[in-house]
Image (tube, rainbow, N blue to C red; front, side, top):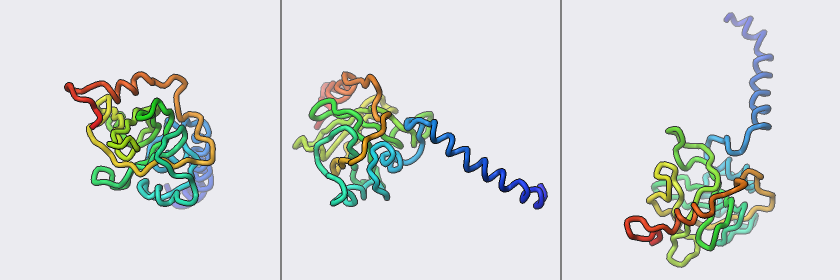
Length: 192
């Protein structure tokens, strides 16, 4: 294409390029998201914190309530570790019982061989010795159950805005979450 022709079409091409994502985002589901956990958690929870996931806990101080008690719509902040160099944030979609909740988050399990996809209502199990949500296990699609890792957690951040409507499904699998958490593996309970 000659430079003259390109310049002539540039305004039209820019208009199409700008309009297409805007139109797609209006009709797209939160669960169609593919990307990092931080923008997903921000969109799903309404909590307006930016930066690496592990920094959310400190950034929330004085702006949002921080606690060690899960509730629906709260963001859980995973600590920075060798396995999670940027930490991780996820949104509580359902509280199942004292030590079991469901999360909706992005960029955890692989789907179709790639990371970044959103997952709805996955099991999170408190395996901390003091039942204070300081250590958790997370459901991982590749093993269809709780993964083998234990992850340290700072706590939960409560937002002021309403969480996204798609945070949880109409019929979450409470029984499946309890089975993930409490059914023994090789004769040993999953918790420490």
